[in-house]
Structure formats: structure tokens, C-alpha cells
Image 1 (spheres, helix red, strand yellow):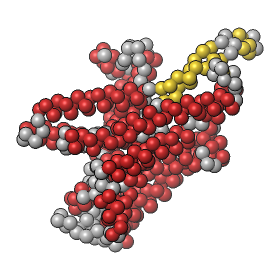
Image 2 (spheres, helix red, strand yellow; image 1 turned 90 degrees about the vertical axis):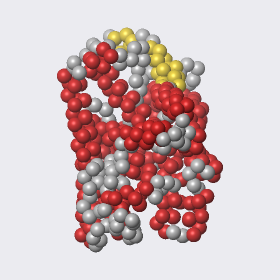
Image 3 (spheres, rainbow, N blue to C red; image 1 turned 180 degrees about the vertical axis):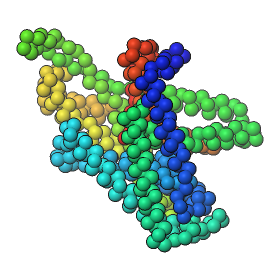
Image 4 (tube, rainbow, N blue to C red; image 1 turned 120 degrees about the vertical axis):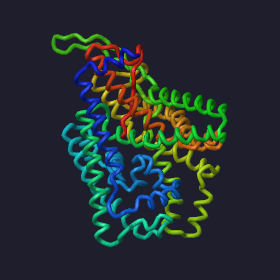
Length: 436
């Protein structure tokens, strides 16, 4: 393993890609600490600290704390992610977009539409943030907006929108000239933002006697096995056997070829947890905005950690797992492609019977995938109650960290093998997941 890691820097092209990626990450992290003009960062951080259980708290995790720091990257790359998901969902509704997504030139056009939608979403979100912050009362650190008015709104819209476009450009540059998927990598970096502080707080609590050494060892063991389990489930696939019959093309004779169709246990990835978490915290978010009595009551009922919150959260995750899997995995298209290229599932008639078999297999494998997603999503609450953990571990951030790390290692592995170096793992393959 040590020799394989050392081989990474012996390949000039791979070394340049890694250095370029790290340089872009430094630029992104520096930008996440440049404040937006006209906003009192300390007052905003205090206000968001009171809103951890709302959409704002969830959003701040994805942008690496840039929102609570009121930086120019406060919106991060999330408008682009939202636009990408919207167009992916629309592709299953509108045949025109579905045709575009199947063609190379069409995908470029959809990508351009996604950029336009990103600008529109960034403008809407930044203007909403500006108006919302203007209407907030002063905190113990003073007013959040130093000088409200139309100039502040325009400046905030321009600054945050430009920050989103710059973050999108950085992500695309990492994809083209660096290593890994750039958009995913920026979210990955944001999820790692709190780790040094979390580690420091944990050590301080152990020294102060608030957490025993035994509890710390048990916590470390739980974290290790959870990470190992998430890695295994991210890479886990159901293999449906496929046989390609022998045929003659011109003067070339092709023999019978046996392979398999891989179906991921987590076909939907982290998207179900994001959708479910966004919906389940909406009552808390609206209660912060409107202060309507019945909304405030619902906020108390749907308090994180309560049985109703956990039950609703789990049901939404299972629903969105099946829903999003049905969007991204089209069994009929796969069956048609198998038939087109002479492939068949043993014992299944080509066409509708093959599509039904694939669809039934996906439905069956999605259930354990959805259940494990529920366990990972509810893990933070369990750890905080059982071990009094002073940090958030599990859920969305855990899956993003593991998925993007595997995807990046997979690309490094491909470079090593292509240049005839020993891979990072003997007898195994990395299977990552991309989010952007």
C-alpha cells in the first residue's frame, strides 16, 4: 500500500492533476472566508446557531460553514446541484429532455440549460436571503445587516450569485484538469470543514471528564465499523447474469460471452436523505419565518430526536429511495439495449419479460438499501444520546465523504493501472459515486 501511494507522485500527469486539485481547493476555502459586504458575520453566525434544526443549518453543512460566516460562497455549489437534480427529474417527464440526455450534443445543451437555471436559482436565493436578513432583529452582537436598503440587496445578489458561479467554475476546472468529480469534491471539502473543531471539542470533553475513555474507545469503534459498512454498501451490487450469444459480423466471429448486469444497493445514493431531511425540517424553517402558533406547535412536535420526527424521517427516506431509483434506473431501456446488442438474461424472454425481471430485482434490492439509509440517517441522534457526542456524525455528510473519497480513489487507481503501476488495493476495485 505504501509503495502504491508513493507511485502516485511518480506519474507526472497524475501528480499535476492532484496538485491542481489541491490548489483549487485552497482557492475555494479562501473564498469561503471572504465576507459578503454589509453583513455582520458574528451576528449572522449567532442567529444561525439558533436555527440548527432548520433548512439553513442543513445548507450550512453542505457549504462548509460559508453561510454562517456570511462569505461570498455562502450559497456554495448548491444552486447548481439543485438545478441538476431538477433537470434529471424533468428528463423522466418530458420526452424532449429525455432524448437530449441520451445524446452527446444533447447532454451539452442540457448542461447549458443547467447553468442558466443555476444563475436564476442563485439570484432567487440570494435576494431571499438579503430580504430575510434585513427583517431580522438585532442580536447580542448587533444588527445582522449594517445598512439595509436597495443597495445592500443588489450588492448581496451580485456577490452571492458571482460566488456561486465562481464555485461552479472551480468545480468544472477540477473535473477537467484535476482528479475526481469537481462539483462533488467541493461538497466533500465542505463536509470536512467541521472535523478539526469536532475532534478538538471531543478531546476537551474527555480531558474534562465529560466523556469517559471507555466511551471514547467505544465511539471510535462504532465510527470505524460504520465507515466500513458504508464503504461496503456503497460498493455493493446485485449481479444479474447476462449472456451475449455468438454471432458473425462480416468475417469476424464473436463467441458467446457471459457477463453480468450490476445493480447497486444504493442506486439513489444520498439524494433520498437530502430530500427527506429538507422536507422534515420545513415546519421548523417556516416557524422561524412566520411565527404562526400552529406552526410553532408543529415545530415542537417534530423536534429532532422525537419518535414522530424519526418515524416521518424514515418513511420519507424509504419513499424517496424508491422514487428516485425509478427516475434514474429505467429497466425498459436496459432491456432494449440488451436485445439490441444480442444480450439476454438466461431463462428470460427478451423484451418485456427481461424488463419485468430487472424491475423486480431493482425493487427487491432497493428495500435493504432504503432500510440501511434510514439507519445511517438516524445514527447521529443515537450517538448524541448514547455517547453524548459533541458533533454530527452520520446521515448525508457520512455518505458524501465515503462516496466522493471512493470516486477519487477510483480515478487514481485507473491512472496507476493504466501506467502499469500496482493499484491501491490488491484484488479489489473502487466504486465511487458522483453527485454533480
